[in-house]
Image (cartoon, rainbow, N blue to C red; front, top):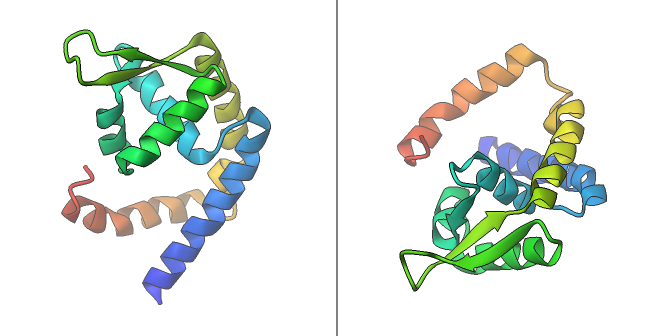
Length: 137
């Protein structure tokens, strides 16, 4: 029952987040990729590293990058030191859309506004051992 509840809530939350991000031309997966680039030291990361950090298959990260590039949110450039790798680099338009989208997500409570702050903290603590065991910290 716990696994079913966890997976169903994940689906519901992703659906709500995607709906909030749709006016920005984003999905939650694309938003996460842009946020990852915003918080990187240079505003760019190799696609392989992005896939690892986002925990998605290389094909998925390539698809995400293509869509973000088509929207003008990133550019893909050759890695300056590794000829086999490609960097995703966030553009000023990408930074602007992250800022606007984040404002909407924060205003919505990231689709978890039905829960009290203390319950959100308790939920995070309950899930910590699972994440730690998986090496997610």
